Image (cartoon, rainbow, N blue to C red; front, top):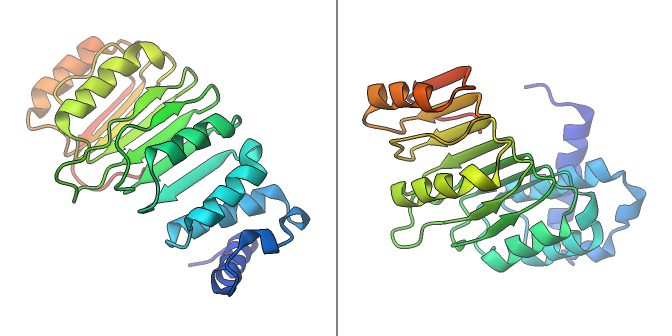
Length: 223
């Protein structure tokens, strides 16, 4: 695997930061770095499970208005209030991915700039299922993974009016029986999402007049 210089720089700096005994981001001179590199370091720390709450809050306070893309992965300390604050502060955010953050229940995904949102619920949770309130008028793509059936359908019903620009939906391991009410939807990908594939196929083609690509398949999605 060939890595770019930027990727190697991100990995190296994340490793140094991870091994810093103080483990306090305020001790670093972040302003000497270009922000795109800072953003990549932040997201890499999240991907490798090294993003703690103190670091998260520091970046949100110092750079919240500059973030274009944020990935939050397997953060046990992340709660609805943290996501709500992030959405209020990151006014330029265009892409948000939240994966396996088991303490979320009803985060408010309200944004006038967000265009891509991916949410992967924790399949191991038995009682709590993430049920986000999504109001993003510019949203173009949404990916949902391991969503409970009732929550999924209620969410899609709410999104019909609040997200009129939605053009792409990707569902994985989320039982789905009907997709309708999205006049701008062009791409729909379902990964092991329905036991009634033929009926879903026919109904979707009927209910989504702008659809140009429909895939119903098995396997892991490229979210």
